[in-house]
Amino acid sequence: MSNSTPSQQSTPSSWVVLKFGGTSVSSVANWNNIASIVKSRLSEGLRPVIVHSAISKMTDSLELLLNRALKGDWESVLEGIINRHRELAREMGVSISPELDEQFSRLRQIASGIALVGEVSERLRARVMAQGELMATRLGALYLASQGIEVQWVDARKVLKSVALKNATSRASYLSATCNFEPDLPLQSAWSDLGRVIITQGFIASDAAEDTVLLGRGGSDTSGSYFATKLQAQRLEIWTDVPG
Image 1 (cartoon, rainbow, N blue to C red):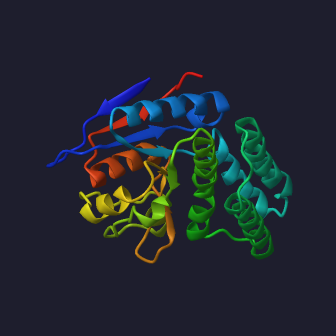
Image 2 (image 1 turned 180 degrees about the horizontal axis):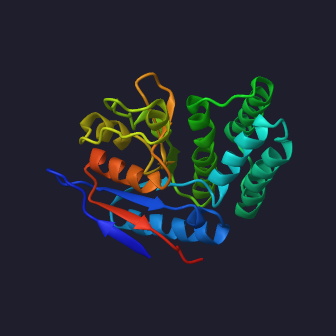
Image 3 (image 1 turned 90 degrees about the horizontal axis):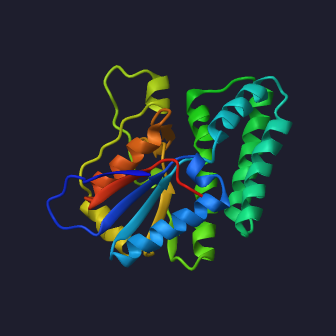
């Protein structure tokens, strides 16, 4: 089921933004459905931009990783995170990419560092929590490519930039950021040269210092709206309970 809303635009657009939640990207059956939706939009002459969440419950697992790292007992949590992605990759019939392996290693290094210093800054928390979306979209891009879809993975943090708000706390700036969402003609031009389908992350952005920031829990819907407006998309489709 989807909710579809037109985005504000002044010129005709072929962009369509498809936002999928965590449950929708957590099984190969649902990815089959996503591939079908993407092919349908392509057949309509549209340019799909997929924005999706981390796989189901992964944000909670990353939160647990941070908490357990503070206690020096994080290894089993990290192995669970890695195994969940490896298992989904096997179901999808794709191999873990070097980029995804690098993310696993980065999480291991960060957790080990937290255990040593016994502290988690808001900046580091945002960086860790963003890994769920980054890992999931890596798998999604691999799967769509395996289905014959020309897809380009894009880091949302290169596009969505947070706005510095007066009197905002450090916690709010890193974990509940607000982004600029004016129509972006240079972005539209640059993305027109990429693959027929673009896949990127919900929930994450970056600040003026290029640090990772989050849009708050449930922020993937907000991300979809930001991308739709910046692209002056024909419409934004927010998919929930995607049937398998």
